[in-house]
Image (cartoon, protein in one colour):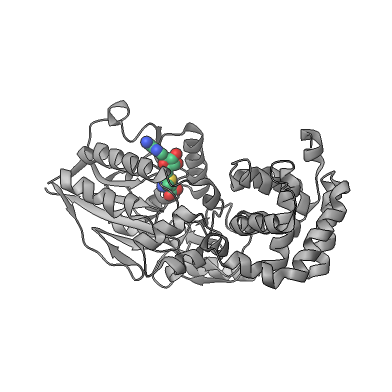
Length: 440
Ligand SMILES: C[S@@+](CC[C@H](N)C(=O)[O-])C[C@H]1O[C@@H](n2cnc3c(N)ncnc32)[C@H](O)[C@@H]1O
């Protein structure tokens, strides 16, 4: 399909198929692919359906991509990625979204025409009807293998069983359940009960999180940017697990604070909502650094935003120590798969050792910048020991002046010197934290 033809697409399933092909077979990011596709749909219900289709397609790709090998004589994934993805989405509509079979089949057949693949309408019809006739036996075959049963890559299933033998199945299950967005109320602009009331009036049900004082859980998925109060900076989208960083930092007015890996600024803004601190928000990627500025503006907050490599302070540090440093390190993001299911498709086993080396490099480079009696909070949204307790243990072995602070949260597990929340626990994303204090 030419770029012009792709741009003319308005059929939701055809758009989702194009997106899914780019994500699953072209290595593109789901979030990035969805943006231009969304812009082609005017009805919010169509946009919501597009997001659900493409997201569930990515989440279940590793199952239904293999299902097509059982249904097709000749695989299509290389010859015609968009058509292949459309058939995967047909199976996702039947098995995961549980749409009425005749509607799912008819709309998928129709979408072959929108994709300029009308010649394959009969094939699409035959493949989906065969699935419906044989679904029990075919599902049983797919369930025999852990990778197709759970729709996760084998290396990740193995790592989870190794690191969390008693919790691995629960983690895999949690990753396969989409989670509605959580909100963080901006305590400088409003109160949580007022946000609940305003959203209730707009027909959106929310509940106050039981142990996060700024957290709100939405009962269903919605476009948060269109909710009353969002443009005025009354709240932001942020999972509750990420909101714990501000508590662990133990912020007080007047402190000098560094957020070393700051974009898009979720935790940086939360810190500024909590206390009158002097914050430097550092980010290596200039485009992502610009997104911090946008969030600060909307929320009415102020911080210095610097572009630089946290692992090379000589290029950006003014030599004045920080009372607090947050290192929210780049990681495998294996704790947030439920929100970003394309991580299953893009992350490779070999990435983990490389990430762990980078995490240790950043931790060691930032430690000299912590003031005596100051505190560094190490965070990742990974659930793998190699990026979490192993990194912190290696760091502690080489830094006698670092003292890990023992703490417990209402959900999660001790993990070496830190604490691990696993995906879905307490309704939260997976997140690891360690709190390190510098001996004064
Ligand atoms: C996990 S995200 C941070 C999320 C952020 N703390 C928040 O709450 O919104 C990690 C960020 O670190 C940035 N990054 C990666 N390596 C870096 C480095 N060496 N120095 C500074 N920033 C880095 C990435 O571009 C990415 O924006």
